[in-house]
Amino acid sequence: MTRKRKLISLAIILGLTLSATPAIAKPKPTLAEIEAAKQAEAAKKAAADAAAKKLAAANMTLKQLTAKANAARALYVKAQKELEIAKSQAAAAAKHAAETAAAVGEAHRVIGKLATNAYILGGNLSDIQPLLSANGPQDLVDQLSTLNTLGARNTTALERYKAAEVVARAAKRKADQAKAIQEIATAKVAAAKKVADDAQALQQKEVNKLRAVQDQLIKELAKARNVRVTLEQQRQLALLEESQANTAETTINQAKVWPDKGFKGRSTIRTTEAQRLAAVEYAKKQVLARKPYIWGSQGPKSFDCSGLVYAAYSAAGLKWPNWDRLNSALYAGYTKHVPLTELQPGDLLFYSYKGTISTIHHITIYAGGGMMWEANSTKKGLIYSNIYSVKGLMPFGGRV
Image (cartoon, rainbow, N blue to C red; front, side, top):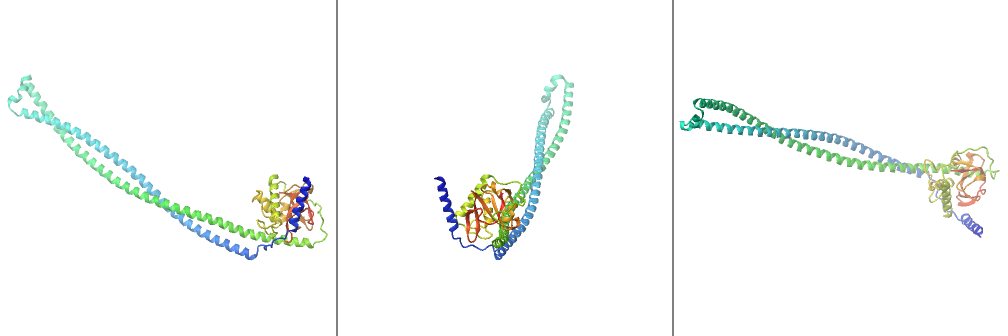
């Protein structure tokens, strides 16, 4: 019962694909389309070049502003160091002045004491009686001599301390002035540094903006170039396959299967079984969707034979540089050859009108059970067919 259902489903698929009227095919890429693509590419290149010039100029300005900012930073650091030195000198001078002032104060007290004693000595005898009553005249002489000596010493000390006080005050005043000047200079340098840093930051934003614009233009240029190259390749491939297909139609004595003349392909494969089955499923989906056959097309709305193969394996995850849009004949050397008796779903089948690689004009995807999914022609469109329905089958399959 299950087998019967499968046969009925197969018959329905064959009926749909073989009887479907193909959609009106869009011509292969024209020379006018290619020329338009070239002009679009040239415009993108001009825009990218202009953006590159702007970016180069902005980078030069940024370089100059960066140098100014670095110089401002260096001056700021130098000013900070000088300010620290000035602060340290001012603090040292203030400390020295305070110590000197304390010493002078002590000297003032000593001199005051001496002045009191002198006053006492300069009064009447009753004022100095306490001195005489102690040890006698000799003791008084000794005390007066001592007082004179102390007075002379303290007078010298007083003069020295006063001079030191003047020097200390001058040093502190000078240090304070230097500190004030340096603080003003540091503030000015800090302001200059901020201006330089802000200018550099703004220019960096401009550079980043221009770089983003250039990157986008480069992407657009690459896309435009790819469009142009794709159109050119599609036209060349379409013309070649179209010519070979036309030749195949008029070539007599084509074998059902050509003999093997020792054809060589790749020594390795690049896909997993899951990827090959995914490629088969993609090809099946396009056939059931009744997509039209158009020379040089690789989807998603239409395909030619090699375009369907390329799109199927691209959809299965095989991307450039491991996979590319090629001519049917080139795929023969781009895959690993397997005997027709060992075909697996996803293997590629090749058809030639002389049994040689260079005369391969058609390529299909093996579906299993002796059937294949193919973009056949503008007349038949995309179909599900028997692998022997097209003349000139090559004696090997190609495993991607």
